[in-house]
Amino acid sequence: MNKVLGIDLGTTYSCVACIDSSGKPVVVKNSEGELTTPSVVFFESPSNVVVGTPAKESGTLYPDEVVSFVKNRMGQSGAVWSVQGAERSPEEVSSYILKKVVADAVTALQGENKLDPDETITDVVITCPAYFGITEREATRKAGEIAGLNVLNIINEPTAAAITYGISDLTDSRVVLVYDLGGGTFDVAMIDITQNAIKVICSGGDHSLGGKLWDDRIIEYVAQEFARQTGSTEDILSDPETFQELVLSAERAKKMLSARDKAPIAINYKGERARVELTREVFESLTEDLLERTILLTRQMLEEAVQKGYASDRVSEILMVGGSTRMPQITRRIQQEFSAPVKMFDPDEAVAKGAAIYAGRQAFFAELIEKTAQETGKSPKELRDEIRSGNVDVQEMTKQVNLQAGVMGVGADIDIVNVTSRSFGTIAYKSVTPQGDGEQEEVLFNMILKNTELPAGRVQDFFTVAPNQKTVTIRVLESLCSEEVAEPCEGTEIGEAILELPEGLPAGSPLKIEFVLGENGLLEMTATETTLHQEVRARFETADAISEADFCAAKQRLEEAMVL
Ligand code: AMP
Image 1: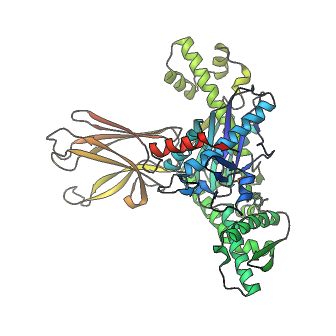
Image 2: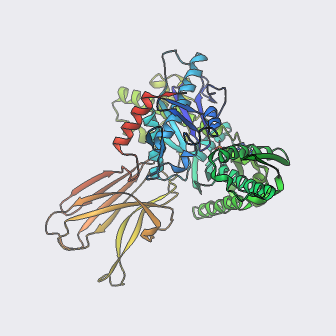
Image 3: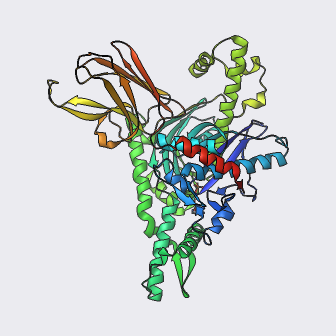
């Protein structure tokens, strides 16, 4: 068995998969015997932290000590929960979820004799919405590191689902649309599956659109019905206990409506009682705009695919992933909008399994490259380039270094190509006159455009603005715009680097700026002053990422706590 795990760190539920001895991905149950674990953390005391179903159920009694929907705030500056005497960042709260799901998986695998009693697993691949920017990805990585994990990569959820799906049948080439509606996020991606490659063409979505919003609509409706039935003018939702109870019953009712026409919801508030019978029809009309937003985002993504030469009629099937696609109105509406057949595909497990396949593949290649480098004297980079170019036979290479066939796992010889979900650029000055003299305006110059294949890179010439300029500040921004030149306000600044210039350079002296975005989504930027070849190299420590001090404090708290 490969000693790696794939983790779907979901907004509402998380799931872990490993690769079994036959090379297939399987989901590992948690200590409660469940295949998915609610992404909810109950800080019972500073030293006792409960994760999962028991934490979710504690929300009603201890609303101030229970944290949920943390993923929606991943990478946001200033996002903290003040619980049990500490300010907990989204990275820290997520680290408890990761710690629990990995520890449970290790215990389960030891119990099945797939791991020795003293063996553990730390190598993981974690998934995130395709829509996540660089800061949110970095925050996810940091959450893994706080939990003591070695995060091999962060990959997109729809890509992971497509890997699982693609690998289940590689005989036919096809283009699939992955519609992934989870608890807190919506992702949509177009993916080209061929016999030897799984390639993301385009992705889009909204990281605050998910099943929770459907629940919120039920909560609002029930509160209004309570007021109507009892005549009460009080805001029942401002009472934390009543609110938490409604959160649970709204989700329960929503799930019930996926199978039945009606769902009852009872509310007790200060001795007054009301009973609401929510019909599927009312529920669908309360939430219609949310569903329409997913359709709009899907159409936008398809338009971008057309610009890349993939017409929407090339989509041969639509994969429905994520727990919220179980709502029947979703499939019905998708089927009405698009002509390709709709398939429900392993909604809860596909993402974690794809992450496990990817992790296994990455571990396999790392070992193959290390062993081949030792035997041939070639550098790891040289070998990686040879494999990527398709000039070498991976199976042959595997035999030559005597790697066990089982280690190779499913999908090791399949190329997996991803795209960037954001554009990355820098602030430059553009003349406002056609002659290029006089007044200049700031523009956002995108070096790497959204939906470009990874790894991606570009070198571009820029020029100094003033005579004897001492420094150039290179501000790096990410954005969702698809044009090379855009308004600076369309981007979000994610970091900067300062290039010191030699004395006496005239205005208009040349500079070279290079952006390289790796397969792991990490951005590197190099700036060179080309008159005297002075260079600054900056790997982005993103502006909003957790500080070193907060990281160490969070790690220490987690190490000292018992995570159940
Ligand atoms: P995921 O993030 O993919 O685990 O999806 C979790 C979301 O799916 C949550 O909002 C759940 O409430 C929702 N969900 C799970 N099962 C159902 C169901 N049977 N009907 C409607 N929504 C569901």
